[in-house]
Each structure stands twice: as structure tokens, then as C-alpha cells.
Image 1: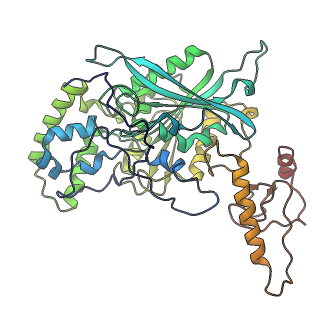
Image 2: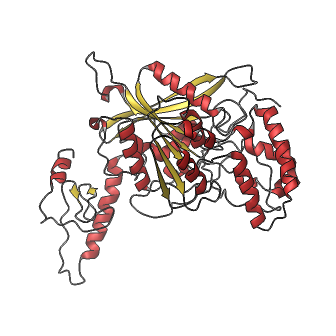
Image 3: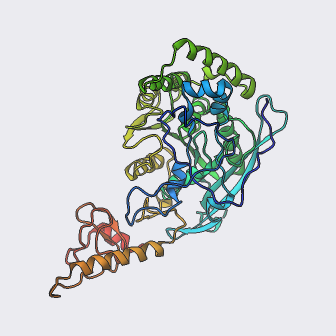
Length: 476
């Protein structure tokens, strides 16, 4: 069956739900089931920690958890029960993320005193074996024209742009998890539903093989508009593979962030099978080889690409773009040694950061901070474009600061009341009227917060103001 430009029916009226899964665990025979191509996403799990800095339910976690679930079914027992045809579908037709356009947030919002807008657009692309063009659905979050720097001729200055590339059973909602981080650097963010994903046309994905052509089409479109300057790529899982496969053919890219890419697809599949052996399944080697041969043939007939050619490790020695690799210590799906191998062979300037958690864990704030610094450096972002964001990592960028401040005031008042002794001899701490720098961790806290948001150290009004506090107070 060939690919089709006809889009599957979607429940646009229903709320979007984030996908929650454990990719590294192989299912039992009793739990194996045929995935629906347009299955909806189960509700997100509750935030792991309850703090003032935690994002609202359904916010950043939903973007981070809208991820692939293919490996849950990559087992010998699944092949036996459903046949290799369903195994093929798990590679090139995984469950499709469903959401409505409203789930992407408002089309205009205020962030750190600047007006921002979201612009949605579609780009036609061609696919091997498909007669008609397919549409890629994209969104760009950027400063409003009225708030952009102006050139000498009065026209807005082109701004740096980061293109975010999602995982294989995900969609552009994933970009919500990095939106605040990138916008605060001064760059804009473009996120797309790759062909066969989300609201874009098409039925099949190719795990990066043809997705690199999607990226090329988006880059050409953005440059034709004259509104972007330097461009960087930030990909996760399939998106990370896509970034690597594009990097060696487009040296104009300023930098790439590669989060949890596999080095070679054939190697990855065999590792998943070996995981099944360790779980106690009896998987004959000859059976695996036979099934893999049939799968390779079927993928070629349906999606028109060879699984053997999905090997990013064969491209990285020809890539000279600065790269930041990311791997999770407990990733049991794409294990850290894939990133280590890619990093070792990569030809350009490079760095590797390992984080806690697994394949789908929300990335820690220190990683987002590191990526922000990396992007500002490789994209040569003017310091004047950077935004002062004291609530970094706290909420989606369109969450009004006043909402967070109200929560901070309430928490500060509760702490202050707890500090009052039973006899009422203690005095309430004085609420700071301006932003203040914590003496222990140097975090810049907002006005009215009596305790540091990071280390909970008490504000001391008797301490002399630092130079940083004096500079920040001018921004308040």
C-alpha cells in the first residue's frame, strides 16, 4: 500500500492529551495489541515535584511527554502474534499524535515585557512514490513586528531561528518544552509536524530518512521570507537523527542539538531483541534474521527507503557544524552508548552532556541553560536580544508573570507566618520591593519573594545591594 496525501480523521474538538509510556519495557504476550494509527494520547502524569517552579498541568510536561512508544511492541512475541506486517507498521506507521491547533497556545502573548506572536503555516513537499504534494504543518513563535529591532531602512531586523524536530510518534507540541528557553535567548522557534505525524499530510514516517527533506523545505521557506538570520536545529530521538542526516549536507546551519539519537537503526533493533532475551523470552537468532529481512523489504515497498541506510554514524565524520549531544543515563531504549559513539566520531566542534532520567524524562533546567548558552554562541545572537527571565523553566512563556508572582507572594506569606513564634515575639520578614540576588546560589529572585526560589535562603534586607541587583532593578 502506497503513501497517501489524504489525512486521517482526527478529533479536533477533543482536548489534546500527552503520550505517557515506558519505551524500554517489552510487553508481555497478554498485553500486546495492534496500535491504532490515529489513537489518542493518554493524559499526562502528574508533575514529579510540587513546587512553585513546576509548570502547570498539561503544559511543558505535555510537550515533553508527546513522544514515541514504538519500542513497547518491538518483541518476538509481538511478531508471532501479529505477524511482521504489524511490526512494519510500528516502524513506519506508529500511533499518530492527535491534538487541536488551540493546544499550541495563544497566537499572541506577552513574555518578559515583549510582545510575541505565533504564526502557523504550511509548506508543500514531495515524497518518493507519491504523485501529489504533501503539506507540512508548521508553527513559528517570534517577537511581534512592533517589538523587533529595526534596520536603518526601518524594516525589522532578521532574527535567529531554532527549528525543533520531534520524535517519531509525536508532533510539534513537543516544542513547548523548550519554548521559554529559546525565546529568552532572543531567537525564534519553528516547530513542524513531520510528514505522517500530527496534522501534516501523509501516512508514513521514515525515522529521519525523508524527514531531512522536510527540514530542508522548511529552511528554504524561512530564508525566502527574509525574516530569519542564522538557523540551528534541535532534535530529539527521530528528530535528533534527522538533524544529523541533514547536517553533513548543509554547512550553513549554525549548530545542532542532538538529544538521544541512535547511531544505527539495525543495531538498535537488535539491541531491543537482545533486551527481550534478557527478559526471559526465547528468541531464535534465525527467526530474527528472517523477520528483519521481510521487514526491510516491506518498508522499501511502502515507504520507499532502505532500513540499512538509516545509519547516522556514517554521516557524522562529514559534519563540521558545532554540535551538542545529549544522553540520559537510564535510557533503556536508545542507550547512552549510541550518543557516545556519535560524539566520538563527530568531526566538528562538539560537547556531550549526560542527564538523569530516561528517554522521555523532562530535561533538567541546567541542560536547558547549557543549550541556551550554546545557541547564543553558535548563532552569534546579539546580547541586546536576550530577555531577562527570572522564572526560567517555571511556566510556558505566555503564562503571565502576575500569576506566578501571586503564587510567590502567597508562599512567602505562609513562610513568614510560620516564622512567627508561638508567643508572637518574632517579626514578619520585610517583603523586598525589588529583585534581589541570593547570597548563596546567586539566583535573581522577583520582588515580594522573601525566600530564594531555588535554595529557599531567607532574604536579608540589611545586606548591601550587589551590582547585579542594581542592574536588574532597572529592569523591574
